[in-house]
Image (tube, rainbow, N blue to C red; front, side):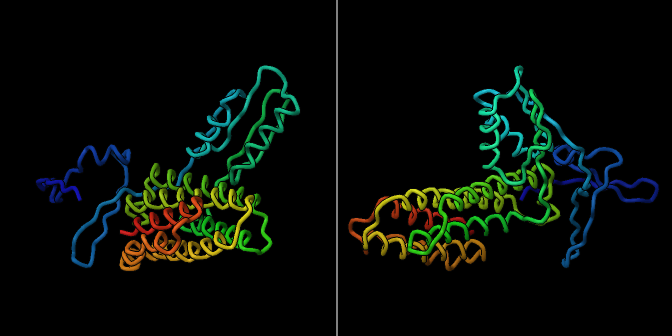
Length: 284
């Protein structure tokens, strides 16, 4: 924790203290800005900027070329409200299909205008979903993928598509909180945001591996290994959500058990095992 030292000043009978310029600049505070001062149980004062829920609609234009999806992805994560894709010549049907297929990878986006040389996409904001809810949804989607591989009827490809959508949405929500300072009102440590980001990436990778395994022939030993790893994966996720440090240590101490139990493990299943162990490491 960084500590600033200031001398108190008195003006017209009021006690004043200046704010560190670097801190004020970080939250774009200036003359007339509002800050909130709260008193803790220990009679300490905490100063935080007041988060104004004002939002100006943003609109960006990108050219349709081989890199358009990369530019779109960047604007999506930054929370741009409307993204316009333009082309000097009229769009061909195949090009429109490419755009639509690309949009299917993202949550809460929709084409609202379709012109011969311009396509307008609305990036809808989702207020009802939290970062925690997105991560939980990603986890349960991978659990459904486990079920599909282990014999229950599940559409793995459809689940995988949903998994990627929630991943992109989670990343966008994290960026939004950090950019707009919502972590202050949510009283959430910045390191926790980083942990959510890293764990979501591990879960997405688990989904990729499960999708690959679903298309392969699996013998009895691979199925047995998957069942073992699924339980470990579930335990690791629960320790992260509950922030249970002692359970996380217990899982970490069992990291070599898989290799001892299975002398020739399936490489893909072993990678899922490693991701599960890594998730437990993000419990601090």
